[in-house]
Length: 278
Image (cartoon, rainbow, N blue to C red):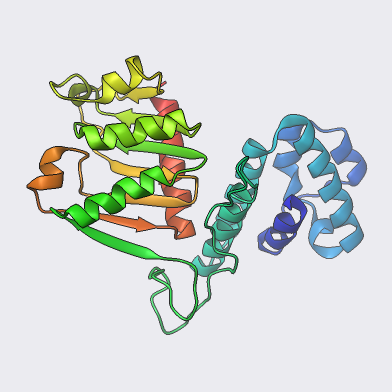
């Protein structure tokens, strides 16, 4: 699979220097990644391209693929001058990240066709039409139907649930998080340090009583995000705080989408904050 993805990325690369197959075999993984995109033979010569891909895949198997694949996709995106090309690369990255079948046989809902370049349409409008598998689903509050859709989305999580929210005080949502954790979903929570200790907050309970990893910002400013990434394939984002006030009283909104660009960007932001708040 990685060979297919990498072959798709190669036309976007613009190399400044050369590297031979023999040289690549003697490089560390990081050194190899730094030079992978710099070999003209990758673009010009099909046999050299395949040889270098083979070296890359061997290095990836030995050292682990996620960091190296991420660096390669980032480099390819930087090399793109056209937004649509960047969208295609983001789609490829999302497809690769979610390409594995989970232990229960579940496959994430990831579009199997790349985004189309509609010259007369706004390329950022990924609502989907004409059979597209990409969806953008806004929901509004207060609404019990919207709340049930949010809970069902959490209950449908199979692999991972990265939650980055200002506060959690709604026990129904906290219980959905606990259910996910208990069925083996990898749950992580980022929240605001001031709100985590508030009366009625579920953040400390999720950490202390349920052993769910939690990190907070520990800063005078607020960690004011309200988003979640489910199974690395779906984003939940909007004004909605995970509170009873937002559920029953406030005028709030959430958007549920599997648009690859949204998934990739929100996932990257979560990972950035998770590392920053360690």
